[in-house]
Image (cartoon, rainbow, N blue to C red):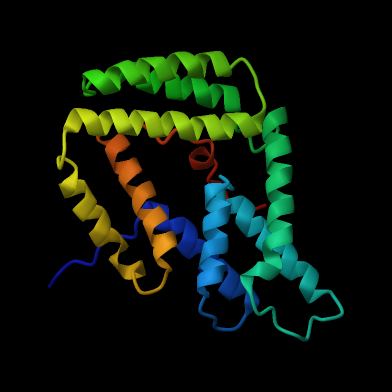
Length: 227
């Protein structure tokens, strides 16, 4: 018997949002392409999973006590304003160092240490990792969260590019095939743009994990339960 592929960690974000919304809504529902794209938007903004779930919970709780409570919520987009409000609260709390014990400066120093101690990187990636580690240590001294979130994405992209150059053309084909298999269950459920983003995220995680490195993202550090 062929073993079913394990659920992809990057796809867990999308699937958990779907399952939570449908379970709280109380009626079966298949997410539309527009709704999957909305989840993709939250993901690209770096909104932690538990913050998205908190926003969905707040929206559906308010609906349950509102004048239209007898009418079912028909779309995930109904929850979008509350998800955005929850994300803004998370960002403010993170900037103040009061969000669930997550210390942004400490996280940056942790990323820097991981990069400095990675021993399997090729020459291009080694140079890039040292440059990124230096900047992370500088940024740990302070800065706007919005700028930090954007810059972390840019630094990770540069590091991944260097890792690929060291590997050479076609060297990551085996990893790409592994990603393809892990995302096969979602191929007929999600629009191509969402699935493409998932492939990029999953490949990035695997390329970094091969060198013992984490994703350079505060998003990936904040995985607690909703309050």
